[in-house]
Image (cartoon, rainbow, N blue to C red; front, side, top):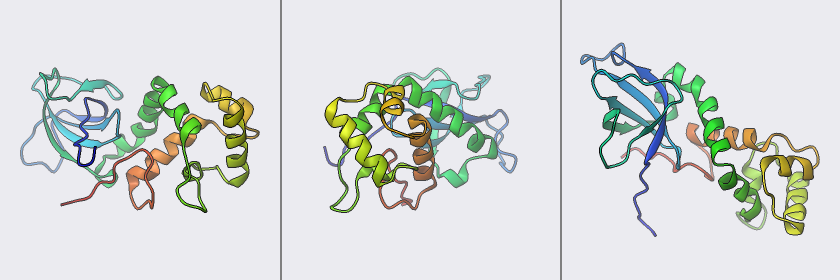
Length: 187
């Protein structure tokens, strides 16, 4: 489905500024969000008299929204507040653990990028030895959970944390290949 517009339905609050940004001329409640499916970083205006907690899941789809009045723009990692950058690993951990099967399937189904590199090697801490072990283990039997991966692949770090680290690296930009995030291109 080339050219298909991928829109987020739900997002998690990374930061909520009740009176907007300090340098803003128009004080309005602003939320910095990360999308649940494609990890899109967004800045949105909250509805008046609404409060949002860090890490809270909010609906941002095209139907009636309870807390968000307007999606202002897509933003880059560098445009996140320090609070949002600090909350990002916590929220990613929550998204990954709530969608464990989706991320375990990456270990089960990922393929080569080219003749020299496998897509799993994009994950931090996975080199040729881990890759060989992962491929051998998944050929014998598909992985069922993160704990299954950790127990069957020798000296494997926490798979959820590895995925979280890769997502943050992709959000920062300048990666050659993207597994999880649609690269942000300013127009």
